[in-house]
Length: 177
Image (tube, rainbow, N blue to C red; front, side, top):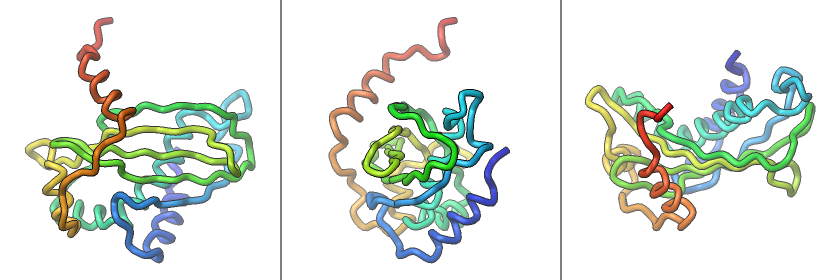
């Protein structure tokens, strides 16, 4: 089940925090609970993505995106992701999630999140996200203008992000199964 109580807690905390640029870093803190575990008694890979939700959506709130989504009747979707799992996370571990946007192109906003246990990074994810309306994808420049960002030009995307974008262009769709 989706952790609605935890999300409400994170949204309340975000509403009390100072506004943040989309390019700013939102930091959230979480404890891994028994229901977050898989049969090997470590953080389930799917639940890892859910905990990343608990950092990413408050980032959107602090950046003014949630308000713009509601006002314009837009939706927010994840159009792709690449995740690296590197260290086990166990029950009752306390983790910190760091969330930020890296930049955007004509269709997508690229976000990165990392999960930390103390000074050790346990996982990292790159998302391709899109804002949508009934006609399809809303250009990021329009979205950024709606959140009051004056300069809608993207900072240069890191090479590892542009490499992922290029590699994904060669991925067959639909899959050849």
